[in-house]
Image (cartoon, rainbow, N blue to C red; front, top):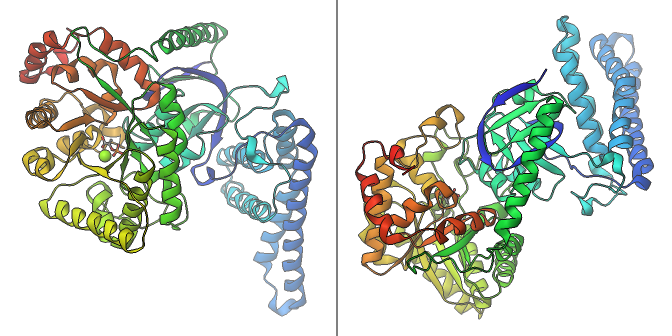
Amino acid sequence: MTISIHGLAVSRGIAIGRAVIVASSRVDVAHYFVQADQVASEIERLRQARNAVAEEIVKVQQSLHELGPNDAHPELTALLDVHLMLLQDEQLTSGVKHWIVDRHYNAEWALTTQLEVIARQFDEMEDPYLRERKADLEQVVERMLRFMRGVASPVAPGEQGKPTQDSHVEVPLVLIAHDLSPADMLQFKQSVFAGFVTDVGGKTSHTAIVARSMDIPAVVGARSSSQLIQQDDWVIIDGDAGVVLVDPSPILLAEYGFKQRQGEVERERLSRLKHTPAVTLDGQKIELLANIEQPEDAAAALKAGAVGVGLFRSEFLFMGRSGKLPDEEEQYQAYRRAVEGMQGLPVTIRTVDVGADKPLDRGASRAGEDHLNPALGLRAIRWSLSEPSMFLAQLRAILRAAAHGPVHLLIPMLAHASEIRQTLVLVNRAREQLDNGGMAYGHVKLGAMIEVPAAALTIPLFLRYFDFLSIGTNDLIQYTLAIDRADEAVSHLYDPVHPAVLQLLASTIEQCRAKGKGVSVCGEMAGDVSLTRLLLGLGLRSFSMHPSQILAVKQQILRCDTTRLQAWAQSVLAAEDPAALMTD
Ligand code: PEP
Ligand code: MG
């Protein structure tokens, strides 16, 4: 029987595939397909790992034995016996083989997949003793993984994401996890998965943002989906409606297959707009910029017809590195790649914004991640100012990259005049350091993100110090409405058209325009086609969004007349319930 699970629609489209359940603790295990002629060597790697772990266990048993009967540890001996037994367990060995032979998963992926299958069975056992054996199985698998980590794979995972040519393994796969950090998500960016579902997460959580940038269907906040869905179940992900259908009937499969094809036709149609200038019916030129997470995303930005990068979230260079941060040279090379990738179009590089739902590392405790209220803690510029040598290295790297093309430097989450002044002192110091070292660097325009209500209420201060402003609506909404953007329990209150949010947006845009300063929106609102008319009506002329959203927003723009939208936008702004007017 088909089960339907409701969550939040975060990335559009329909994905149909078999479920791959990944435990949150195992997302860092490599996932890639091996070629048919590499299957035997993958099985051999597993066999070696199993033998090595078995040998380790036997050695410990022998040393216990040598201690003599007085020092015997009967419990430990019994436990080691259990581990040996689990290691040889037929269900584990044959199951893992099945994933490698029939699906061409790499050895580590096959092992963790089968672990999930067996772990579920343990969970369902009545006998508490047997249930507890799950922990032993996990330990045994962990030891095998550790062994394999130390032994280079003969199979190059370089071709990750490309299913093998064999037709029987060309089954689309969808990833189901309890939770994924933004860094985990990034790891899956070039991967094999056609869609994602997570149990937790809000619509503008960074995990959802990365899913959207991958342009594949995703649903977050689909509570207990990772429990309800079984390994290898057929699943439909409806990224438009935020629904996940498990074990769909043939009729549903046909219906969604049709919708999927319709989506492809629509994309094809939109792609024709790539070279069309984004100009409204009344001749207003609109700037459509791209949000990127990695230098390599510049290609997608150009492909979508972006006229620059409005937000390069540099923190993705800092995440998932076990605390070893990128040094100046590594960052310079990355920013330079982005700048060169954009072929003379401007690149807005935002300084590091870790903390809150973007931890440096899973379970790490830097950047205020282990604090009670991380979103209100040492995040973004606050962290940068507390680590001046790290911040200076980043500023130097960005200034050096500016020697290769137009770069704008964007500072996240400023709220205080003192933070602005400290930041500018450090930017000047970075320039001096480069001068002293005889290093080449370029001019940058300086911008501030407006994403804290305190900033939106003191725009004149910001306009005194900065060349342009960029409104981060994701955080502006979070902080104005006191709604954690990553918490699905309050996602129904996360309202981009709340009158308070609209007031802050409208007045920021108006004040920038009055002073002739550039202003754009780089939060998720910019890429939401249902809000394009409103933002145009409020006077916005620069939008920054994921490359995948650019053409749909452009299509809206081409149909709009801003002279007509102005009065309507003012009425929305004054309304008690603006959402009711949005469909006009
Ligand atoms: C925002 O807050 O709107 C924004 C663009 O920054 P981020 O989503 O990375 O916090
Ligand atoms: Mg933000």
